[in-house]
Length: 352
Image 1 (tube, helix red, strand yellow):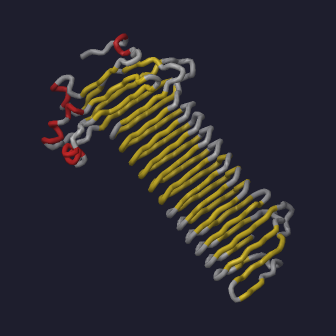
Image 2 (tube, one colour; image 1 turned 120 degrees about the vertical axis):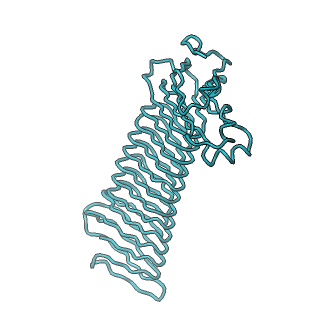
C-alpha cells in the first residue's frame, strides 16, 4: 500500500493505521520502514503518544508551522518464538485525530497469554521521529528512550524503564521514570520529576523544581526558582541554586553547594552538608545523620542542639551540657546576617 501526501492530511475523525501485516512478506522482515505521515495541527490541539518499546524523538518546529510530521520504523526481534511470530501481524501503529487530540499510538496483541510469551523476547522495537509546532505533549512508553528537544509547550512523559531527556524549550514539565536515566537541561518553567531508581540530572532550570527520587543519584545544578526534594537512599548533590530548598530525606547523603536562599529540611540517617552563601536562613532536623554547615562571612544567630551527637563549633560559641542535651546559642562573627537552627538526635553538628 502506498501513502501519498494527499492521503495523509487528516481531517476530523479520519484514521490512518500502519499495520505490520499490510503485506505478508513485510510483516516478518527484520526492519520495516514506513513513509512519513503528515497531519495538520490546530491551535488548541494536544499531542498524545502511546506505546511499548523503542525510541521516541520529538523536536519542536518554529511556531509558524502548522504540520506535524512523523516517521515510523519497526524492528522485529531476530529470534522469536513461534507464538510471538504468530501474533506479529497484530502489532500496528495508528495516527488519528480525536477532537482536539492528535494520538500517535502503538497497538499490540490483546491476549494476556500472548503477552507472557512476548515479554520473554518477542516485542518489536518501534522508532518514532516527530517534528511539530509545540502543543501540549503527553507520552506514555514502556521501555527505551525518549528525547524531547526545543518544545515550547507543557510536557508530560512517563517511561517505565530507560532514558528520558528533555532539553531546551519552555512550559511546565511533569516527568516520571521508574528506572534508568532522566535529564532536563535548559528548561524554562516549573518541573516535576518522579523517579524510583534513576540517575537524575537537572541543569539550567528557570522555575520551581519538585523532585522525588526514591533511590539513585540526583544532581541539580545552576538553577533558580527553588527546589523541593524527596529522597530515601542514594546520593543527592545540589549546586548553585537560587531560591528556597526544602528537603525530606531518609538515608541519602545530601550535598548542597552555593545555595542562595532558605534551607529547610528533615533527615533520618543520611548526612546533610551545605554551603550557604549570602543571608543564611537555615532550619534542619536530623536523627542519626550528621549536619555540616559552611557559612562564609556569616554573622547569623545560631541555635543548635543534639541529644547524643557532638557539637563542633567555632571556639567563641559556648556549649551548654545537660544530662539529655548539648546545646549552643550565639552569633557568628561575620558581616552577613542570618539565622541557623539545627536539631539532631544522634548526628553531629558542625558549623564553620
